[in-house]
Image (cartoon, helix red, strand yellow):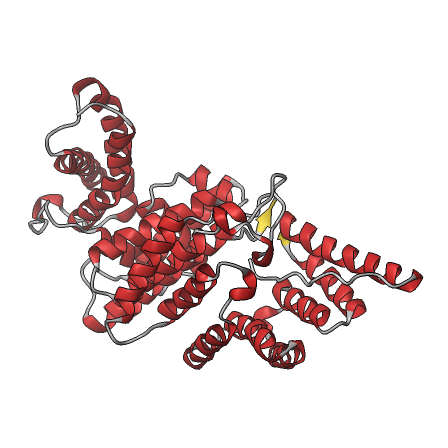
Length: 428
């Protein structure tokens, strides 16, 4: 097999599987990660010259295990020299490990342990399972490399402190761990689809990595409806990526997007996944969100959107969770069905909600609904507040532009009658 892009992708796909085996065998997450990285470097140097081995996964496991054995011997010898009776785990007493077993799911469960904060779980998952370097993670999340390194180190220490063995969780633990895995992937995708800060609206590297990892979990758990629902949600949402930005990187709201640019193959795949998931019976939150995304994608024009059905789905979602973003999005759907006043009344439930304190979305949605209701002056105030609270430059520019457009509209109206412009949706 010649060395090419496919061989490089093979290394990336095998990395979490190899790391899972080595961690389970030697029970040392940090050292195992270093050993696997050394094995990957060795492969990148040798395979282009000698060709990809017949069993590349076994090759990587063997090289990484040798590195770990050397490391353990060195540590044991050092501790013996220090006359310390407490030795490290003996690699020669390790339980037999099948090299054919795929430990990727176990690695997901380890990285997404409930004891870790979401930020730590995201960093560790992208590092250990996704294969991103510390420098790449730092660039993606706009933090110094030293800060990201500390975050990863704290996550590893948190795993050690938890004392949780690297083994399959019980049935009860598995459901909790899987929820965390899916939540972490959801957060990674959302950050990639709409960056929380910086000059770019989207970070496609993050959203594409979330989709890749979701596919990996789907491969490992093909019968899980919520796993399929999350992957469907990602695909149906990401299908609009090419239409969300103008040539200058400016935000284009959903109502104004060129829908011919939407990725129809992704929409078809996402719809098929969703249909299969819904047929399994129990419907979860990711399936409902995917169904909402599908309704948006199915509309040939913005005015064809089935808002009553979307509102009904948000009603179901709000019964499952008190997530403020669900309440926020439901208010938009309610406004599209029953009028902006109804939507504005629904937003009052979020006033004073500490979870949205300082977040721009509440003011942005309120500004949009005030504009729909004909209160241009009130909308301007809210657009300005929202613009001051977002760290995303494209979103800030969009919100500022909306306020400026309304100011011009008021000025024109005061000097004589003008044609009224249609409202812009805050949906993206």
